[in-house]
Length: 200
Image (cartoon, rainbow, N blue to C red):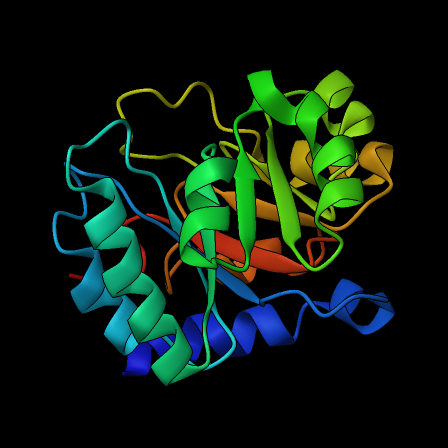
């Protein structure tokens, strides 16, 4: 649990969290079918109050796995967001959705239709960060990442500039683990996100 505690503590000590008007998880675990093939195992070890973003990428067992993750979330006091698939989120009673950048324009309509949901959206540049109308944005890649799709890392200074330009709660994703999380304390982030950073 030490790795989880370090991440949780770092996230909760981010100064920007003190200004939050809406309760948002300090940590977001993003599932990935290749890099985290057993997301249930990771979810069971997350600290209370953390969030899980389930990205199914069209898997045939998506609903069954989403329901398993929701059961874990309810038992452990976690928040479950479904990646991209608002219909699945509504069907199983998830806590909200996470939108990829190309679908971020759906954030405001979803907020109006589902005021009880938490809506987050990905942002990979200043324009998308400013345009998003979700409750929070997830900026990536924050640091050097092992993800095959990650581009050039922003680094703390550029990440902080993007957070300021966005003017809304922001998470950092990419290359974040217990050893690197402390580098992001002064960036204005309200939380940290990771795929492999929470351990197997």
